[in-house]
Length: 342
Image (cartoon, rainbow, N blue to C red):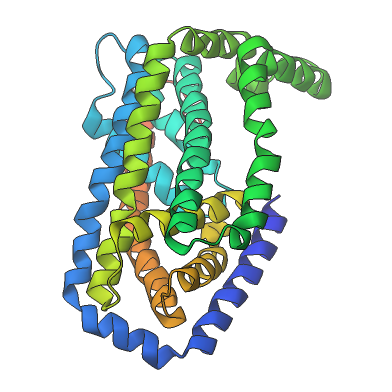
């Protein structure tokens, strides 16, 4: 899988470079220079959509955190690391979730409960992605009065709908992780660190507990969807600063369908080439010049790096500090240092 990610990343990088070269680096940089330092406003603005997403996640964790140790500031920090890992590292959009589970466990919440909250949040994100994409396609059709241009996207969206439905039913009524744990035990010849980490029976039970609170799921879904919509204003603001103003509806539509492409072709690290190609394709439909679309993509990537890199550095600092604290405590008690489990 890692090899596939690297190959896909190289291909995507090639596509991105080709698009930049084709549109002309000079024109793109002229647009970015025109915007200037006000582009830095994209950094604090990104806090808002991420915060809405964190509030939704906190709703899912709340029943298993009676002492409220997983506070919003702490979860925001974890969410920023999750996002940065999935956007900037070759982890196929799942590594960030594993990191998030580990970090929240530091607050003393059971691993199965944390994992169930993350799994449910990812499932709700998938549902919201369909809803947001559908909204984007409807807006584009309304804005362009051309449904045939989106027939392929609509067909792909409709064809993939059974997948989330299947996952929802399977996680609700099946014993997915118990069976996965049993399979791992047979494969490894008995109990191991891996099977202990899976904790299948408890994880399946925690997921069923999540399903037993439909109101919480609806509230979490609502917060996530608001985050999606608010996040699209980044596109609106960036294009206005770049000198290519568009309407709010155009911004929501472009953001929705571009994010859909990044999620569909998730194997490409950071959506390299996918985001650029999507913005050029759908931007052209609403009359956005190709150089504006490429400039927008570069600005978005600058924001991802500027926002995500400090998060990744803080994570490594926290890991090093925790390892030092644990090792020092064990050494003081006369025990041998150990490598901490997930």
